[in-house]
Structures are given as structure tokens and as C-alpha cells.
Length: 133
Image 1 (cartoon, rainbow, N blue to C red):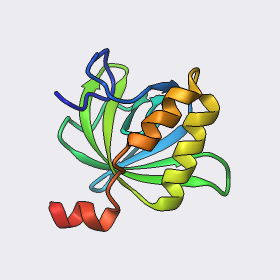
Image 2: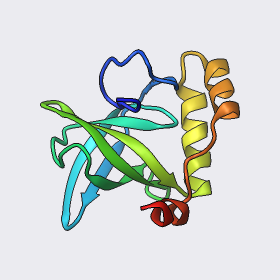
Image 3: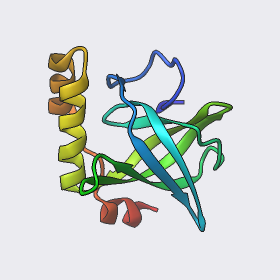
Image 4: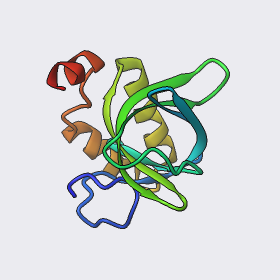
């Protein structure tokens, strides 16, 4: 799979940054709470959430503080006993800026992350992602 977001896939194109952030995962009428184990420009592994199944669209809310949250549209690409791997499909500009700063500040190799950001084609806006569905 080209965008595995949780395992040891060596084909990954972006750095994973170990980072624990509280996250709500919503799909249809259900919601689960977990924490990110790691994060990248393209996805995350959410520990403590074992549903929904791979292929399911989800909305993540990453809570950085009482006043700062990042909303991300994603697809579940992997599920295991520890959690789910998700591939990011859409985020607003402000959320992308927060994500970028989180990765740069917490990365072991910030220069590598900076290069990845420069090469990154971007996550689609929510409107673009919906138009393609």
C-alpha cells in the first residue's frame, strides 16, 4: 500500500515524528478517543482506537490546547490491536500551519522535515477532497 500510516513500511515518503496528542476520531455517528503515537505531513498512528475498519473515511480532531484544535479529514489505512493508521486527505490552511510547526519543533531532524514540507504537494482542501469523491 502506498500510504501505510502505522507500520514499518519503508516506502514512506515523509518523516514520522513521535508525538502524543489527544485526538477524537469521528466516523458516521460514532466517536472514539485516543492519542497519536506519531505524526507526519501525510498521516498519523492513533493509539487506543481500533475501529473503524481500513478504507473508512474519518474526521480527526487533534487537541493542542483548550483553544487550538486541528481538524483533519482522513482515511483509515491500517487497523491493529494497538490502534489505527490514517492517511490525511484534507485540512484547512490554519490546521496545516499548526501541523507544520508541530513537526518542525518536535522532529529529530528538522532540516529533513523542512525539505519534505518544501516538496509537499499539499493536502487537499476539504472542498477539493469532496469534489473528487
